[in-house]
Image (cartoon, rainbow, N blue to C red; front, side, top):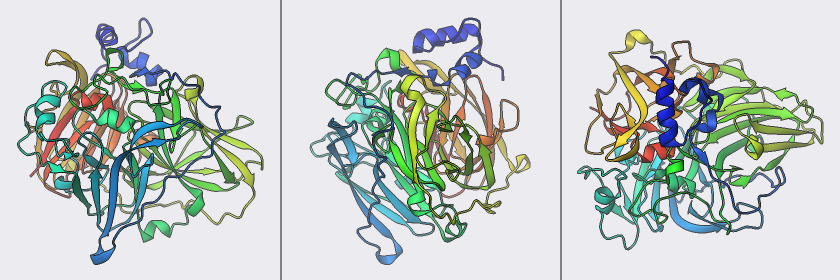
Amino acid sequence: MSELSRRQLLGLGGALGLTAAAGLSTAAALSRHPSATGAELRSAVPLPPVYRTPLPLPPVLKPISTAGGVDRYAVTQREASLEILPGVRTPMWTYEGVFPGPTIEARRGRPVTVTHHNELPVPTVVHLHGGHTTAASDGYPTDLVLPEGWHDATHHQHEGHAMGAMHDPRAVVTKLTRDYTFPMIQRPTLLWYHDHRMDFTAPAIWRGLAGLHIIRDDAEEALGLPTGSRELPLVITDRAFDGEGGLSYPSLDPDLRSRPGVREPYLAGVLGDVILVNGAAWPVHEADAARYRLRVLNASNARHYELEAITDDGRRLDLVQIGADQGLLAVPVTHVTLPIAPAERYDLIVDLSGVPVGGRVRLRNRLGSGRTREVMAFHVVRKAPDPSRIPPVLSHDLPTWDRSDAVRVRDFSFRAGRMHGGHGWLIGGLPFDPARTDVTTRLGDVEIWRFIADVHHPVHLHLVGFRVLSRGGEPPGPHDAGLKDTVSLRPGESVEIIIRFDGYRGRFLFHCHNAEHEDMGMMANLEIV
C-alpha cells in the first residue's frame, strides 16, 4: 500500500485547506506537520498567561440509587455560563452544568444506569466511548433524545444529514429522557461519554458535551499505583473564543438544527488556539515531589498532540505508560514523548520526586506552535512520603489472539471524496448511511482489519477492543501497546489490527474520530449476528 502521489496531495490541499512542502508526498509532508489535518481558529478575546490558573478536577457524580446491585445516576444536559478564561463568561452546553461533565466512577461487574434528561435546544445522543455496551445503549447516532418542543422526530433524519441521509427505520427516538445501561463487564480503564448525534457530533462536543467514566476493580487497586490526590484525570481539548468570550466554531448553522457542516476552510477539521485541561486554559497544578498517575484523554475534535514533560532546566522526564484505551498493559512501557490522537487515552506515571521544591515541570505539545505548544504545568511545592510503585507486571488478562485465529481479513480506506455534490470523508468510497449495513460478522469471530489513510484519521470501533498488529508494514510502535479502541492513522499509512467481536449482537459503528470527518460521512455500520 503505497503513499499517495503528489498530484493527489495537491488535490486534497486545494479542496480541504491542507498544506504541504513542495516536492513531498502526502505522508512525508503531513507527518512532518501532523497537526495540519485541519485549520486553526484564532480567538478574538485577550488570552490569559500560561500556567497561572489552578488545574480544576471534574466533580465525581454521586449515584441517586445503589439498590439491587445497580448504580443509578441522573444527568441533565443543559446550557450554562462558565468561566473558562479567567474573568470571562462562556455559554456552553453541559452535562450537569460543568465542563468537562461530571465523572462517573464505576466498579467492574456492577451495572450502571444513567438517566439523561435533555434540556438543550436540539436532540442529543449519548455514547460511552470504549464501553462494552448493548446496542440499545451504545448511542447510535439516530437514537435521538428530543428536547421540549421538538415535535418532528424525523426532521433530523430526513433533512439534517449533510449529504442527504436516508431515513433510519431502526432508530429509537425518545422525548426528554433516556436510560442508558452499561454492564461494566470489562477491564478497568478510563472511558469517556460524549454526544453522538448524527451530523452534529463535532459542534456538540466543542460546546461542552463530554465527560469521564472510570472503571475500577480490586486487582488494579492492589498494584500500589499512585492514588487519591496523586491520580489526576487530564481532559485535553482545544478551543477558540469570539470577542464576547463565547466559543468560536465555524458551523454552517449556528443553531445546529438543520444544516450540518463547517465552512470551507475547516472541512479537514477544526483546531482551536487555546489549550484547555479539565476546562481551564494552560493550568498549573501544585504537586508533591512524588509519582503521579495521569489519566490522559485527548477530547479535541481534530488536534493531535505529542506530549513531553520538561523540567525548568530542560530535562525530559519519562512518561511511563501503564495503560491504553482499554485498560492496563501487560508491562510498563517508557516513553520520552508520546503521540495522542483525538479520542485516545493513555494511563501514565510521571515521577516528580527528583524535581526540587519550587521547581516546575511543563507538559508540552511538540506538534503545536506558539502557545499551542504549551499544555499545563506541575509546580512542585513540597516533599512528601510516596508509598506508590510501578510493578514490573501490570496485568495477566490481555487477549492473545494471533493471525492464525482470524477467520477473515478486511480492507478499509479512509479518504476524502465527493458525496452528493459536496466535499466529504468516506470509508471504502462510501459516506455513512444508517440504512445500509457495511460489515456483518458473527459473535465470537476474530478478524484482521487493514486500514489505509490519506491524511490523519483516528479510527474508533464501538463495542470491542483490538490489538495493533502492524504499522506501515512494520511492527507496531511503542505507543500502540495494549488493548485499544482507537488507532491513529498517519497520512499515507497502513495499519493492521486484530479484533474479537465478543459481547453483544446488534448494530454498532466504526468511524473516524476527527469529529468533523465523522459528521461529514466517515462512519460505517457494523452488524454483529
